Image (cartoon, rainbow, N blue to C red; front, side):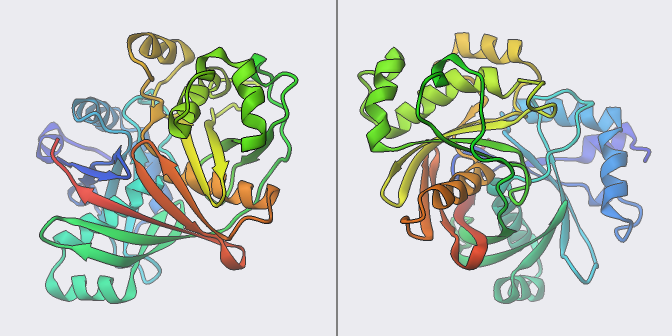
Length: 339
């Protein structure tokens, strides 16, 4: 796929947020010769296009994007749009991510706001199919056209936990009773999940002086995931592709959680350097929709007394997960924002 500099200059990132995550939208329709081409072929062409990846990284960093939702509309009978997820912090040679839970809600909101009246009515009544490695159906629960915001239900399919429990070599985890799992399917991204109950919290306070006097569950989760993530995310022996690390504190059917993402920094050294400059490094994101899905599902598997409607509280906002009937539906908001 040849992309000229003039074509790149015509592209624009439109700012959106989902639960605090910056998820700008990029329409690449002008770059696609045939919208009915297999999207895996188009993805491969874009991933290997150095000028496009360089532009994406530069522009993404300018708007401090967590994930960039690259998309084009199609006439495919199985889905309405194709999306690829670019991460501005990683190497331009790295593959696109497979899914972004907060970003897919932002994308659907943008498409609805940009559509003709007829298309908009169709999407509002029937929902929208989005190809993101696999097809995800997104339904509109509520939308405010004046404020350019809305609430959406994303059908994420059945959940499979790949390994449980998982032994993770880390000093903080040694001799600790932990509830953990690893998910590499369903949510679209690989996630390690570490859950802490009220019963376990006293032991964690003794083990980790950094949280000894912290009472806010969100701050505890964020502090722990920052300490754990920089070592686990980039453990290439356990996770050749990297992994997202999630720490969640369970309180009834609510989980206060934080995520250390694999696609924000390209290496452990840049992550640590970032952490030395800031209270929390950029890998320690404000919210992660796929991470919340992994946390909610693993919590329900390990603690079956929990209700099948689980709320995850992230530093950037709240997301709900309906886990009835063995399927995962993510319910959360999105809004257009200023850069």
